[in-house]
Length: 364
Image 1 (cartoon, helix red, strand yellow):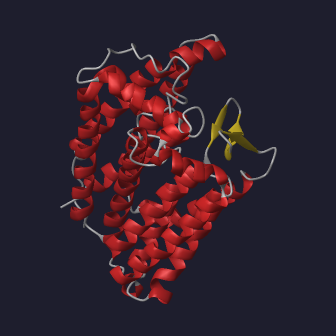
Image 2: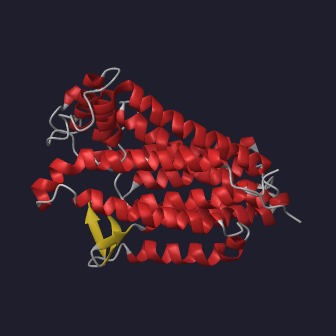
Image 3: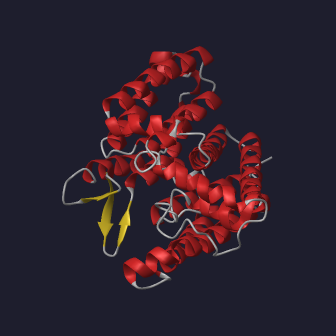
C-alpha cells in the first residue's frame, strides 16, 4: 500500500516562480510588437495569462490524480497524438507558422500536437518498459519495438518540419531507455546511427546547412542566417551584471525576431542582466534536482520512468534553448519552458509537472 503525503514544494515553488517571471517577461518582450500588430500592448500578455491559468489548473488536477491512473490511458493517448500528427499535415487544417505546419486551429486559438506527443510518449514508454523490463537487454525483443514507435513519431514531426521538437522527443526517450537498464553498447550504437542520420538531414535541407554555418560564424551572413544569433548576443552583452532595467530592452524594437518565444532568455538577460539570468537557471536547477530525486525515490518503476522522462524533457529544452540564445548551438526553434510565449507548450509542461508532483507524493 503506497502512502500519500504532501507534494514536494521544492518542485512546485520553482515552477510557479518561473511561470511568474515568464508572464512578466512575455509582456515586456512583446508589448512593442503587440501594439504594432494588434493595437493592443497587452495582446500577448492576455493570451499568456489565459494559458498560464489553464496550465496551473491542469497542474493542480494532475497533482491530485494518482499517477498510475495514466498507465491505463497511455496507449489511447499516444494513438490520439499520432492521429493529430497526421491531421496537422493536411493542407487547410494544419496551420503554417515560421515555415512549419505544426498547429491545428481551434477557434481563436491553436493547438500544437507535437507538444502533447512528448508527454504521451513518456507515459506510454514508461508503461512499455515497466511491463517488459526483462526484455530490455535484448535489442530486437526489448529495445527495437519502442525505438520503432519513437522513430515513427519523429518522422511525422519532421514532416512538418520541426527538427527541434523531434530532437527533444528522441532525447527524452533515450534517457528513459538508459534509466530502464538498456545496454550502453546498444545506446552508443544508436547514437552513432543517429548522428549519421542527423548529418544526412542537415545536408538534405539547405536552410539547415545555413543554420550550422551561422552557428559557427554568424558574421558570414549577418543579415541572413546569422541574424538571429547576432541580435541575441547584442541583447545579452549590454545587459551586464544588473541589466538595463525591466522593460528597457532595445533589441525588442524589431531587431531580435521572436523576442517573446524562442529568444525570450536574451531579452531577460538584457533587462535583468547576469543576475536575472542566473536566478532563472538556478530555479531550473532546483526544479530538475528535486525532479530527479523524485525519480530515484519513486515507489515503483513506472513512476520512476515517468518522472525521469518529464525531467529529461524539461532539461533538454532548457539546455538547447539557452545554448541557442548564447551561441553554443545552432538555431532550432525550441522554446524555454515556463517562460516562452505559447499556449500548447506552457499547458503541456505545467500538466507534466503536475504528474511529477503527484509522483513526489508517494516518493520514499
